Image (cartoon, rainbow, N blue to C red; front, side, top):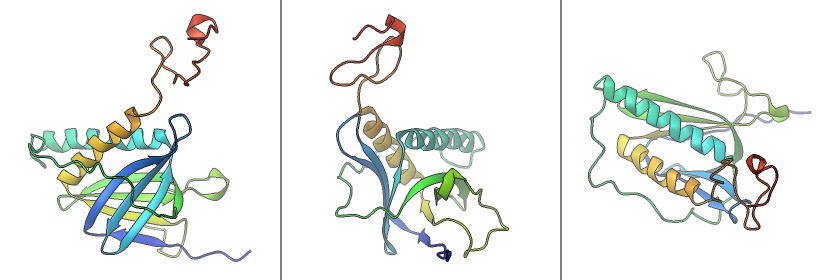
Length: 185
């Protein structure tokens, strides 16, 4: 089987970086979109990956504030992009691994395609541009990161409500709560 060369999408000066969903709560598909003069890229990911990315970004911001690398306060007039995902779109790949670094006052996200057979390849200097899974590199400033975080929180919260007893999501028909010995709530 011939190996397809790796595709690397680069967004050096990103105009738009958002998370959005398609579908109804309980059956939503999550997407990240990066748009710049280089074009539009859409990648599919899991809700848990969105939550993990937001948590990591918040952790980084806290550490960068502690080191005085970024301002201590969040911008006052933060503009949050509430527009829907740009459509029509074709998903470029499904996300497997993401990393975030802070370089030259910019956040650099490296979003890597999931490897066949669920094997993740951790990017390092030994991997050439021709090797490995597809990759999307997105550079964002601090305001773009704050905007992404606020939108991502809203998108995640728009899903099914959590059960107050077991914290599992409640379907429109209710759910069998393990903390209530299987009784439907």
